[in-house]
Image: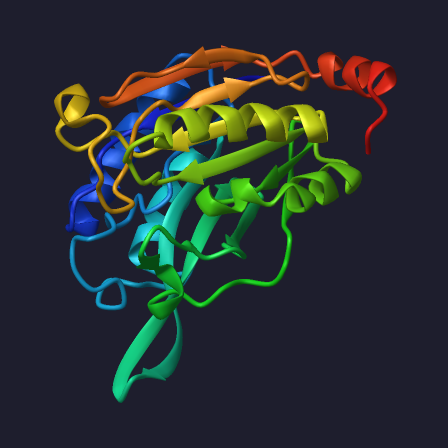
Length: 267
């Protein structure tokens, strides 16, 4: 299976972000990619304003725009967006929360996975503005089962192992990773560990690092660190992007999953 990982930098403009995503999807598809994974928050970057003001359902312009592109190119696209969720009170303040949704769209499927584990760490509380999801999601690409998780989910191995038990050979991981001291090391360790302990391919698509390499290692919000990667089912890092916008194309050998699970029966 040929896959594409799109590492881009979203802005606060959902219309511009849709156009950017469509352009990058077309570039990946022109190189033969059939499964194309974009970052978390593709529709609107974190820390770029209120998420609820541009949140849309799966029948909104952003999701259907990507659906039209996926249909035209006969590919499957996974991309992060936000959907309206609920209204809560936080210390006397009314907050309109959203779902942090990974859109999955192709000619015969159009669905979403709502991020289960919200990023409530490092002095950041995603749950103040994002309602956690509950349900795991898998889908099919060329006869193979693909699971999906989002960013902070990577710290919860049981989610990845359960996806593998449900048949996933590949897990798409849209991400907008927070930079800071040691965060790139953690990213590399966690992605490799989830590939190894679940014996799956990990397709991790991250937001590019604002400011590029010159800002690397500095504490930031969850606006991206780059370093999108493909991890094999033995934990090997097959390819890794840098800090800036980039498209990674890679051919997955799905037979490696069966071989890994035979020699390392950890599920």
